[in-house]
Length: 160
Image (spheres, rainbow, N blue to C red):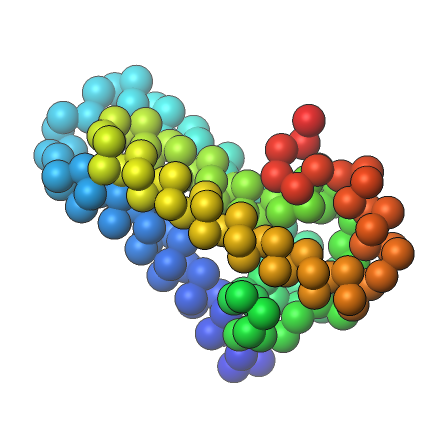
């Protein structure tokens, strides 16, 4: 139970608060008044959709996979899933939680419209791709042919 909570808190601190804050700082800490109405609307819509997809994925992972999402570069921070999830949000793409985070952070990028925020966003995508590839190796080892067949049917990030 304690390790579950650690995983959720780390995810919240890093992905929901931390990276957007670093994007804000990298953009020169603009005044919120500088953000246009259109930017605010896009930020709100992408935040709701992105975080909603991530929460759906986390709940699905906990209920179906009996695990927690926070696994960093093959270091088990919280209990890993005990079964391969291929339905629900994981039928859309293999990493719906991360896709949701990227959608949310893209909304932040639109609101900030700065080179600094874009660089942070690109660095995040590159680092998370390395993490995902490490995780895919573990999933191949844990679930074998079932995982390999799943990767043939479902894309890594984008559902199309």
